Length: 277
Image (tube, rainbow, N blue to C red; front, side):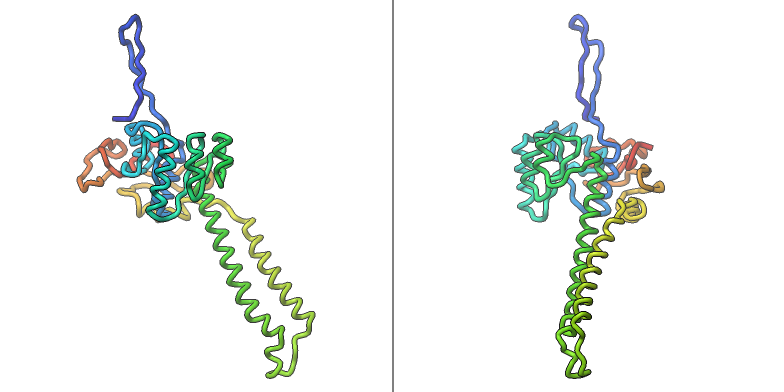
């Protein structure tokens, strides 16, 4: 069961050939899903209008649990699925590229559109991946968290600095030392506070996308069943892994050869992050 769509070729009413067509996931899909689920701890679902059998095969190949596959849904069904997940708690981000995804993108707490998608999807979404690479989802999350940490740092620094500097500028030490801070010194101290926050914010200009092995390698190694090999990762390179399937959701064991598992419900990561090896 590979989830293929059969195309029958017949001549004069007699079947001559059957061609199986199957959707191919993006090369970076498996890497992205492994980082999101194993390294960042994000629960990922698949919403699709395709039939469940095809969706399950694609999900299995890129590492999405079969229990998280919601298939055979119309646009309103995707909206209902997003609402249901929102009711269960947590914030929901929806990634899509088509007209059918637009209502769900609007319903989600964060809508993310693929740059190569339709105009209506990009207009509805709050974030657009310009390069149309799924790994940019990880980059966007990492950048957002980096900015949030910088905002917190600036807030704590400004609060602490002003808590100490304002009373001194107001003369709180005058009774003890009988000296007051000159007005120009107080103005300079306030200027230094603003300059320090500005320089700290400008440091974000030096942000670089994460190198996955350096930043997430340990989580990927510990979270992937039977991991045998992880290649060196640099910007723009392909992460390569080879794994042995050794676990199933129902507690049973899988005896398939490495990389060839076809067991229903098996949750092993049998593909490389970038391509088969």
